[in-house]
Length: 142
Image 1 (tube, rainbow, N blue to C red):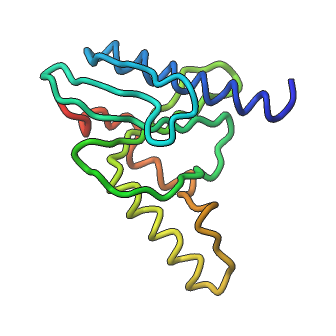
Image 2: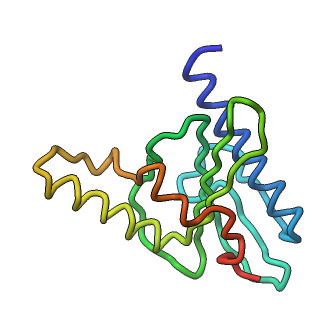
């Protein structure tokens, strides 16, 4: 399998794992199926709150590439999914969109302050930055 195919399969796997975990926790989940620019999942919480989720998946402990977007704290979340190559269970990092955009901006400022080149289209967060959000399912609407 080519590197591009592997990335594609990792992303699809991440979306299905995230959807399955949400469903297991009582959320109603719909996959957008395709390259929807704003959301991978449309979700309704057990108490009826609707929100969207952007899923990012990777199989290596690497930089999380996150595109800049308008913060909509009440209605949009990111679920970052690490899929170990050893087929161990996935790791989930659940982050409200507004918090992730702040972390993304902090990273950009740090790079620029060091005099290093920074491209906003390649922005995101370091692998370690996501760790404070591991298994933070409680940040999602109940």
